[in-house]
Image (cartoon, rainbow, N blue to C red; front, side, top):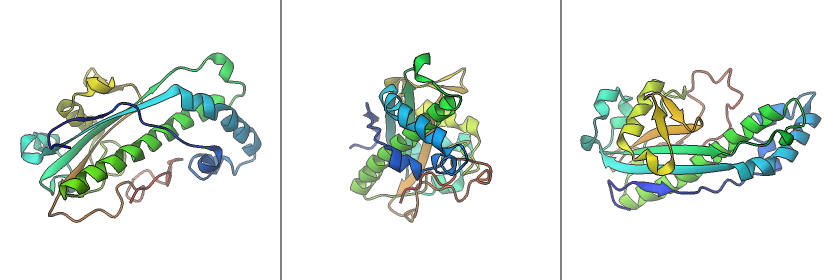
Length: 224
């Protein structure tokens, strides 16, 4: 790829199964409660419809830091420790399920969790591609910085930086009124990259998140 050239991932495959989900929060927690039988039945019934209903799309770009205005967005110091940035957005388009799909009281909750699981899978697929691109350029990377995620001190309103610097209309994503993402399940992130920075041990981790004790998704995904 060329530095400065937007890369669009038109359709990211979402491949998860019941056994994998059973090991992943929040499903691993739910499957260990008194209502685990009902929950497993709901997941088993909804997993295929959910897989068919979601369509993750990704967009990222590698840009020299001095060609951005990131300093005006109060970035974490580690993010701007290299020579370049990876700026990315993942949007999860979801086809609304018919009411007939939901048969039990917990189906709506399970469906939402399956959407979130799909977004996590898409995130890892995209970061795998990003790492291949940065390796090709001879760059190391920082961890992922996602405004408002709780794992870094970068306020959620700063996600506007990613939307301002990417042609997000190519993946059907935007910030309505400059603040609200559409589609709702959209992840905006950035990574610092460069030949002189130390490679992050983990790109994704819950370890530094300030809401880890309350989050049902804690520990769901890490990526080396």
